[in-house]
Length: 175
Image (tube, rainbow, N blue to C red; front, side, top):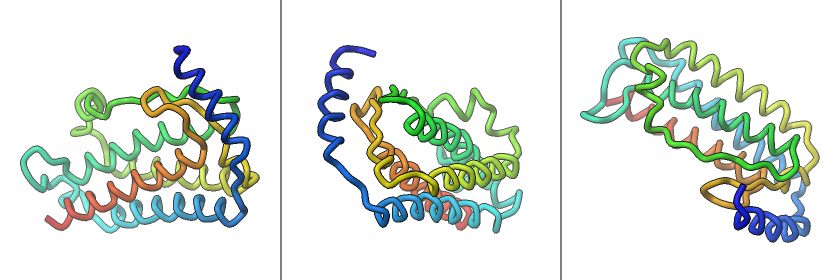
């Protein structure tokens, strides 16, 4: 980890010790995380193979690709959340979605298997999060692209990410 990131993390860590999260804030963050996953899964489960394979427009992902993307990135989010809960100020590595569809062969994968992974991962992480102390949301880490972050930031980002893709999935399936 470079020295600028370490310095930024130390500065942020001292400020974050002052930050406190209430039980209602914890419940709110976890509920948003859980609800967003449930929404995505429900939209996908209401679909079928034909609808998932339909490409909505040139250069846009079909429903199956969206589901695969979410499955792959749920693994990343779960890993980040678990590291923030179990390690002191971990480095959280950024990544690009660009190589995933080709390198991980989205075209040949079964979207239903990816959907099962999303559902199981979301339920497991929601269960873990439901048992944390409210102040655990302030646990810090250092993101390689964004700098200082907290568990709360990652949980919120995971909820926003899947909500955005739920909208994308809905649009793709309804095109």
